[in-house]
Length: 324
Image (cartoon, rainbow, N blue to C red; front, side, top):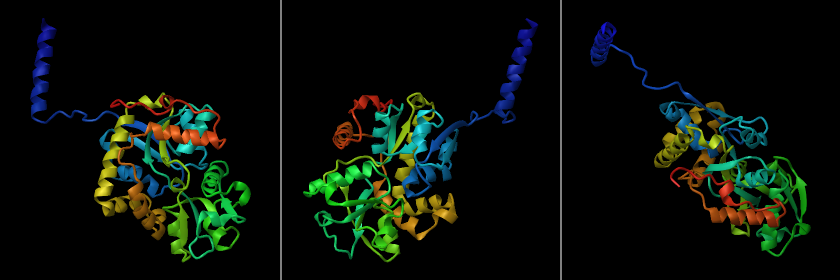
C-alpha cells in the first residue's frame, strides 16, 4: 500500500513537470542506419538522393543515410546481393544479367525510368543516318550490352555487326570521335556526352536506341536483397525520393543550388549545369512505379541477343510494395 502511494505521488509529480515543460522526453529514436551505394561518382542522375540528403529529409525521418560512391562500378549490385548495403543504384540491363547469374536481387524503384544510352557521331561528320555506318568503325566502352544495342539498331536499318568494326575505347568516347579513331560511339549518355561535345565545340548527333529497334527500359534502378527490401526504413526512403523529385521539378534552381552544395568543387561545373537541365525531364516521378509488360519485353530482347538464358517471371524481381 505504501509503495503504491509513493508511485502515485511520483506519477503526479512527473505529470506536473511534463505539463510545465520541465521534463525532457526524446522526440526521436536513435537514427536508423541506411546505406545506399551509387553506381558511379555523384552526378545529376542522382539528383533526388543528393538533394534529399542536403535538405535533411532523411534525418527528419530518423535515418542516417550514407551515400557511397564505388571504387569499382561493377561492385554495388554484388554488395547489395551480399546484404552489405540496403540499396544500390544499378541499371535494368545489368539487373537482368545479375539475375541470370543468380544474384539475389529485386528492383525496388528507379531514379531514371527511360534510356539515356545513345549512339553518337560528330554532327559535322559524314554519318547522317545509321545506315551510313556500313564499313565504319564504332567505339564502345563496355562489351556485351552495348554490342547488343548496336546490333539491334543496325539490324533495324538492314545492317549487322558484321558490317562495322568494333573498337574498345574504354571511357574515352568523345575523344575517340575527335581524333578520328572511330566514326561513332555506342554507350554515350545523351545528358552528358552531347553536352561535353558541345562545350568542346565539337557538337554531336545522337541516335536513340528506343527509336531504332530497342525496347525502352529503365536506365537507373534501385536494387536490394529481398531480405533488405523489408527494411523498416525502405518505404520512407522511397517516399522521400518521390517528394524531393517533385520539389526539384517545381524549383529546379533551388534544387541545383542544393545539389552542388554537396561537393561544390566537383559538382559546380558547366558540364554538370547542362546535364542538370537535360536530366530533370528524365527523373522518375514515382520511383516505385514499373511496367511489368515493358520489363518482359526487354528481358525477351536480351534473351534474343544472347545476354541472358531465361526470362524470369517479373514477380520474382519486381518488388510488390505495400500499396500494391
